[in-house]
Image 1 (tube, one colour):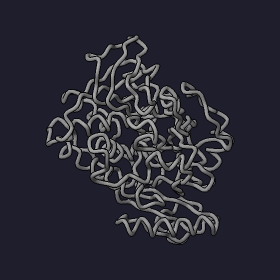
Image 2 (cartoon, one colour; image 1 turned 135 degrees about the vertical axis):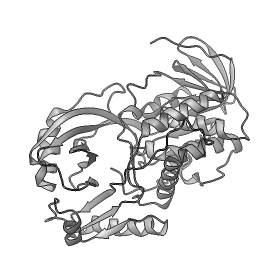
Image 3 (cartoon, helix red, strand yellow; image 1 turned 180 degrees about the horizontal axis):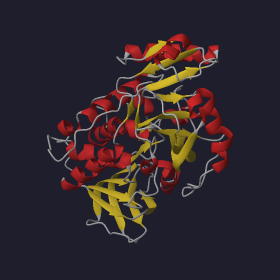
Image 4 (cartoon, helix red, strand yellow; image 1 turned 60 degrees about the vertical axis):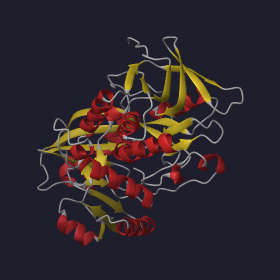
Length: 403
């Protein structure tokens, strides 16, 4: 790839990684009237062909077990549905919507049924429209399910489904660039700290330039730990492979299919026109290479398809039309976002570890990071519980609704 060089030799904020999180933080900085600094986004590949954002399923849900994660998704839903207003009424920006097929969580044992009940209470208290369904109610609403082993289900069809994540990503890029954010195709290969070690003074690019920086944002997705180590620190994030299959059914369902999270670990949702999308991963879930997107073809035959056909007998006869592998930027500490400044390297800011929730969380996380960079604190939604400090303190945030 051709490397691009920065226009200046010093920037107030350098964002390492220009995919969905880096783009969100850059846009929210450009949209903040109190921020007047210079921003550089360094992205390895501006085609974004091989990154988590390009392999996302663009889903949106409110069904989390912690209130903060629910609030984060509520803001995302509002942003998507009102994107043109958020972007200053720019009539070039498309009107987006959420395809509200909903999410359906199934519990096949008493323990997970209780977890669903507790989570629904949290969601309802935050204003989400989640409701519990008995097996009989599930069968009445969605006759195609086999619910013989199901204890209870949880569903929400308000602001839950999928949306055009590519359009959101594109317009964050376009508007922030028009406002002066500089994107370059290059790679950060080293960082230099000051004499006391309390700050990153500069970054070094693959093309040789040394760029001074006021603050550095780690928005490197699955490469988060690799980027952190350049500053002499670590973060518990690694790439975990996730697989997606698109398929058609010989006998399409007679109504919309919610994004169904089966107890087997397989998930499947409506796409439209007799087409569906399924996802999952193997029982063994190791860290993989950053560039490893190879499919595990045996997984479909041995696990995914059998689970689909068991839960929805009409999916016994289906045909795969496309498939791909992607990466979760998995936070191995507690599967939640890692934000805020490092406890010792004070100008190194984390925007990492979203563990499969990144696209739907990107509006709130980008806004919060922009506030942190501008004010040193969160001004809208308080994201402090996700700050990096919880990791050395050994105080995880337990999120029970990780897919």
